[in-house]
Length: 64
Image 1 (cartoon, rainbow, N blue to C red):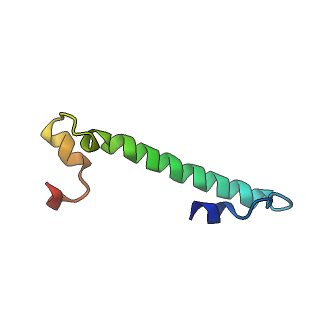
Image 2 (spheres, rainbow, N blue to C red):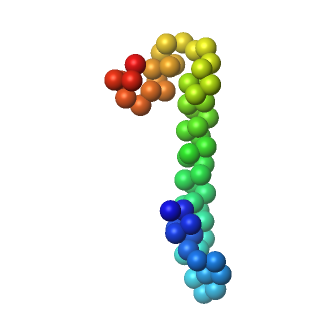
């Protein structure tokens, strides 16, 4: 999907603004996904943490 936002290769001709906006959107999505991974990393690696910290990283309360 991110490739579709960027558009076809060689599209930078007269539409460089649209390509720049697409690149910014793709970059923002990648940053958000990376930050989310960093946030839930302790849960994924079974690190020792406080119960409140563990609960804050669960998306649904029914998972607890």
